[in-house]
Structures are given as C-alpha cells and as structure tokens.
Length: 176
Image 1 (cartoon, one colour):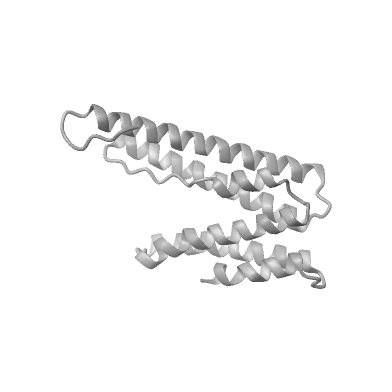
Image 2 (cartoon, one colour):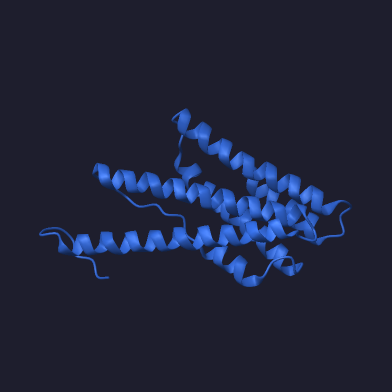
C-alpha cells in the first residue's frame, strides 16, 4: 500500500513546481522500490505470503513504474517508445513440475529480478540526474535490452510449453 501511496507524490514532485521536486521524487521512488524488495523478502522468509499481497504487489509495482515513466516522457526526459517497452513488459511466471522446469523457472525469476533492478535503477537515475549524463542513457538502454531479452525468453518458453502440452498423449490440447 505504501508504494501505491507513493505514486501521486512522485508524480506531483516531478510535474508540479515543487521546490527540489526531482530530489523528492527520487527519494520517494527509491524508498518505494526498497520497500518492494523488503516486503517480498519478509513475506517469503516468514511464510506470510497472502492472496492480497499476491494481487497488490504487482499492481503497486506497475503503478509506480508506469507513473514515473509517463511523467518522465511528459518532461521530455525519456523517449516514449522506451517507456512503452518497459510498461508493456510482462514478468515471467511460468508453472513447472520437474527439476529442469524448476531450474528454468528459477532462472527466469532471477532474470526478471535483474530486469526489474535495471529498470528501477534507470528510472531513479533519470529522475535524479537532469539533464541525464551519458551513463544514465546507457543504463536506460541496458534496462530496455534486459526487458526485451526477458520478454523474448518468456514468450519462447511459453511457446515451448504450449507445444509440449499439444504433443502430450492425454490431457487438454492447447492451440498455439
């Protein structure tokens, strides 16, 4: 819930004529991103994963990242196509049964976490550094590349799972 409440603060700090708005937006964005990581860690380590949390966590992430990206586009600090790639990206959540699939799921989850960290770092850098130095632009393009690679991996894995489901002798057939 804290991340959802942080969204209007980030947007107003960026778009409004708030004194030290970039610094405030960067600090609130960083705090919200940090609470995302801590929330997930504590929920898993204490076996306190809830249905509410499973629903709200990705929603809060999407709202925070989307709001920051749209604000940065409106300020001409980010190209719209970059924001669209990141916003449209889906986090992989493949189901799996055997060890090989479990390893692939764990690798995809690690890839997804790396992609998310790169996206958050790029957005934070764009908020904090205005105008953006070259290293920030490089970070943005690395985040976009990680997003595209993660998305391609997800869709190729999905296609393979659907093909495997269609070739199975029994069970539900799925059209590709």
